[in-house]
Amino acid sequence: MEDQGGSAEKQESHSNGEEEEENGTFYFGLTMQMIEKQIKLMIELQQSLGSRVKVPVQLPPGG
Image 1 (cartoon, rainbow, N blue to C red):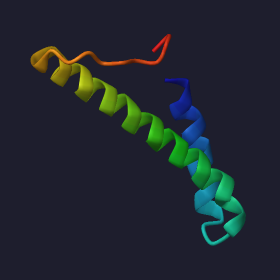
Image 2: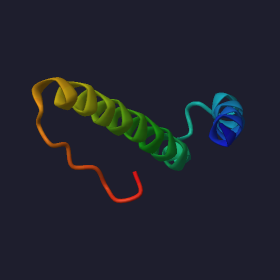
Image 3: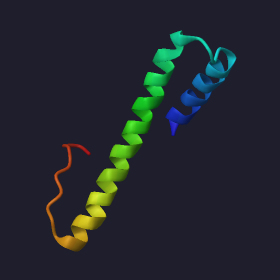
Image 4: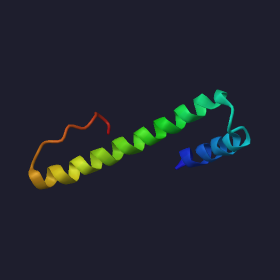
């Protein structure tokens, strides 16, 4: 939950200079967060489907 506070700060600084292309790092960070959310959703989907279809789901160690 700590990430949300950090992303809120980034969004504020982004709204101040929306047209600066130097905000590539901001967009990159946002994209990485979105990718992580997508991966978590995919894993949850695979787990729910796997439990029904009895297909072994490979998870990353510690995940």
